[in-house]
Each structure stands twice: as structure tokens, then as C-alpha cells.
Amino acid sequence: MEIKVEKQEAVSVFKLNGRLDSNTSQGFEEEIFSAITDGSKQMVIDFKDIDYISSAGLRVILKATKALKREEGKIMLCSMQDYVKEVFEIAGFDAFLPIVGSMDEALNAF
Amino acid sequence: MAKKAYAFELKNDQSELEHLCHKCEELGKSVGLSDKSIFEMNLALDELFTNIISYGFQDHREHIIKIKITVDDLYLLMRIEDDGIPFNPLESETPDLQCDLEKCQIGGLGIHLIKKMMDDVQYQRIAGKNVIFLKRKISPQPEQGMTSKK
Image 1 (cartoon, helix red, strand yellow):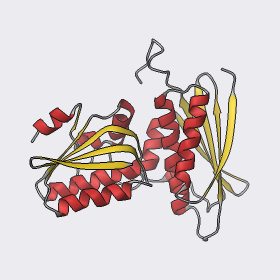
Image 2: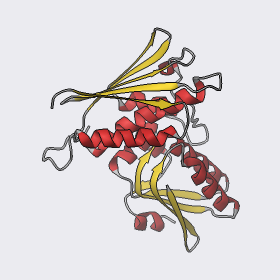
Image 3: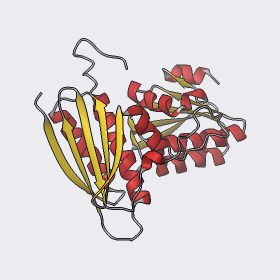
Image 4: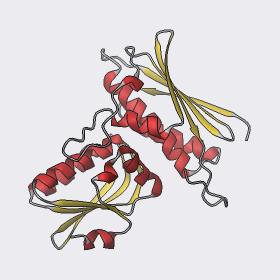
């Protein structure tokens, strides 16, 4: 999986490409937590080019969401394929994670 | 479509996940499964495989996990067999879905996803092996006119 990190003003945008599974989740976790350590409190994770996620990927998103909440930060997820979104719904994560259709909507939430 | 069966083996090594992914895509494309069905097949097998290699073996030897997939017009049937310690993952606790963020625990999430996503999941201990049977209705290709929302 490729991870591109961009800054849009105060917001860190993570653009993921590929598969978020137990082989790749650790690299993603390191990337996201290094941003949190560097003081990022607002994050968008762009799922447009993610065609696979497993519980290992969900676990990283959950950990990051909890960490950001402690910092009074905020995370937005955007542009998921239907079947990727369905995994978040089945896991019950859509109850506390804002998932929106587009990058614009995600950025406008801050 | 006539019934078609495929079988392959994975070693108990994390790196085999990639092999599993290729097998799912190759097989799914060869019988014309939708992306959604390929995704569901891959996710279910990934979660079970990851569970087996994480908890199933107490020695440090190589083990073989056998996977058999059968596809017909309506259903995807999967059978996963390992020679690890007796373990029925279906008995693991279901995570509390009404939880709020702070209390939300991640344990058993993979198995929970499988139970919710598949139409039927069975465990049997057969001749010293753990065997799991999965059944899932095939989702049609979206571009073939009538799409079905689950």
C-alpha cells in the first residue's frame, strides 16, 4: 500500500492506495502516529484508492481516532467504495467515525 | 454456471496473505465474480487465516492451511482446514456494537465481520483438524442490469 501525506492548511491528509490489511497496517499506524506526535490534530483519510480493508486496518483507524480524541482533535474518512464502507458499518464504526462521500466534504468539516 | 472447485494451500506465515489475495482475484475473475464477492471471499479467508497463524500453533514449525473454494450459480462455499490446537473461533465473544468510542474493543472483530458478512459459518473438529465452512450468496456484477442491494 502507498501512503501519501499532504498538508491542507492545518489538516493532515492521508491518501492511501492499495490494500489496508495485516501486512500493511503497521506501516500506516507508524505514519499516522508520527503525525499525531508531530502535533497534527486534524486528519482526513482518503479511501478513494483503497480496494481492500480487513480488521487489522480497522484496528489502526480505531487507535488513531482514540488518540486524536484525547488531543481534542478530529478525524474524517472519505471517498470509500461501497463494500469498504460496508465493513465499517458491520463493525459498528460508522457510529463514531464520520464517513463522507468526498474530499471536499471532509475538508469542509474542519 | 456449473459447479467449480478450487483448492490451494498456504503456509503459516504472514507473507502468505499476498498469495491468498492473488488466489482470490485469479479465481474470482476466472469465474466472473463481482468485485464485491471477491472482496467478501478475500476478507473472510484473510481473517480466518490471520487468526489461525496468530493463535493456532504453539510450536515454531511450518504448518499447511488448506483452502477449498467451490462456486456455483448462487453460492460461494469455502472450507478452511488447519492442524492447529482445537479452536472454534465462532465461540469467541462478539464485540459490543453499541459501544462508544472509548469503550470500543477490537478483540474478536475479524470473526465478527465474518459472522455478519457470511450467510452461514460452521466449525467442526474432524480427524484432529479444525475445519471451518463458510457460505455466502454471490453478489451480481453491478453492470449486469438488475443490481441487488443486500
